[in-house]
Picture: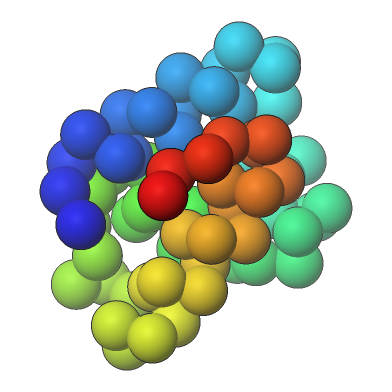
Length: 67
């Protein structure tokens, strides 16, 4: 995973005029994990498996196909 993915997530969220807090409430993910994804700081996430799961859930929420 790379920083470019984080940029794509941030741009998609901002284009939908959503705050991190809104996304956190609706996805039930903690805002600091969402921020870490957007910053490409995958080491801040609990595990690689959770990073992949959070990334998949966040991208689906934003209607993105990151595959």
